Every structure is written in structure tokens, then in C-alpha cells.
Amino acid sequence: MSNLKILVRESYELMSSRAASIIENQIHDKPDSVLGLATGSTPLGVYAEMMLKYKAGDTDFSRVRTFNLDEYYPIKKADAQSYYYYMRKNLFDFINIPDENIHIPDGEATDPNTECYTYEEKITALGGIDLQILGIGVNGHIGFNEPAKAFAAATHHVKLDASTIKENARFFANEKTVPTHALTMGIGTIMRATKIILLANGAKKAETLRDALYGPITPQNPASVLQLHRDVTVITDRDAGRLL
Ligand code: F6R
Image (tube, rainbow, N blue to C red):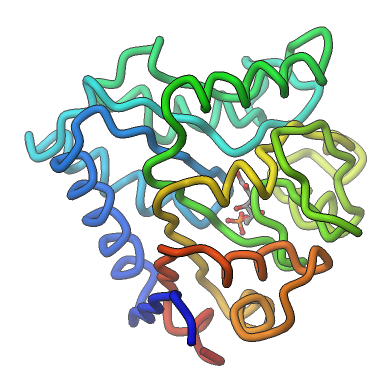
């Protein structure tokens, strides 16, 4: 028996609008919701929908608090490849969320371990994450929790997998300029979220997703841990959901 709710939609747009509606309802039910946010290609459609809902007057973000999953380390906020920059350009600059309600691991911090500790403390202090949005890497990573020998309990400083660097090189000038490290919420941080939405689109995620959702629960496939969470909604397009 699984607690996973799986919604396979015909297109990327329908996947995105389903997820955006869940977020909208979450904010209506609890206007000061703590949202956990992802970057990368997958959630761009969700963020576009959220901006539209704000513009249409359907969603008010003035009390919402957010925590991003991860950030490269080191990286400058002004760097167009930073997740700080991504969040500004793809969501935050276009909705009414106050700056002080936004949290992203600081790629400019002098000590990465202190930054991770402080980040985790802030999440705990705000009562934890109500709704966490996740994408999934082709290697099964969630956040930047790469395949490993054990599940990480909390936000930590991590070395990126060669496969992740290769995959993310599309956002950089070339593979050599992709940062080798990152700061990421841990698997424990993610699993403490009350609700989780896992998004995936495109054919190259189909096998990863099947293995994560139906295969053995192992830190070698970090997303497989979601099988143990009480409230996960998996939303995919047709291609990514082909094997579910
Ligand atoms: C990004 C993140 C990553 C991505 C994953 C998929 O904040 O945490 O786990 O969700 O790498 O990336 P895309 O969506 O670009 O395929």
C-alpha cells in the first residue's frame, strides 16, 4: 500500500496548472503558509501560473514564507546562474511576497556549515514547511541530495555528482563553470514537510520516477524515501508518467 497520490497529466501545462492550484488552495487555507520551493526547468510553468494568479487577484503572497531547497556554493547572488537570481526573475519580482519572508541558502556565506545550520534552524523556528515542491534529478536526487550511502538529516554542504554537473551545464557557459558544491536541505528536512508535491516532466525522467516510486527505498535513489512520507502528490506530464 502506498500513500503516494499519482496524477499523470497530458501536458507540461496541465501538470503545472494542477500543482499551481494545490499551492493556491494551500495559501487560501493558511495565508502565512511556509512553502518549500525548487528551481530548475521543471517548476517554471508552476511559477508562471502563480504569477498569473497573483495578477488576477486570486492569490495574496503578502504573508507567505518561503524556503528554497538549495543553492550552489560558492556563488554570488547577482550571478545569473544562482538560484537566488532564478527565484527573483522567475517568481519573486512579480508577486507581493515581502523580502524578509524569502529564504534561500546563502551562496555568499563565509562558512558553508554555519549557513546550513542557521538555515535549518530558521525552518524549525517557523514551524517547518507546510508544502514542499520538489523536482527530481535524472539520478534520483531531490534538492541536491545526491545518491549516497545514507540519507542526510538536515541542511548540509554537498559535493555535486559528476552527472548533476553535466546535467546542469545547460544553464552555464560550459561544464567547467558549474560549481562543484552546493548547500541543500537534507532528506530529513524534506521529509519533515507536512505535504509534498513531486513534479516531473519529459521522457528522460520516466525510469527514474518509476524506480523512485516503486523500487527499493535506498539512499542510492534519494527520491525513493518519499515512499515513506504520509502526504506526497506526484504530478507528471504524460512522458514522465509513462511507466507509473
Ligand atoms: C532544484 C533542485 C533539483 C531539481 C532537479 C531537476 O532546486 O532541487 O533537485 O529539481 O535537478 O531539475 P530540472 O527541473 O531542471 O530537470
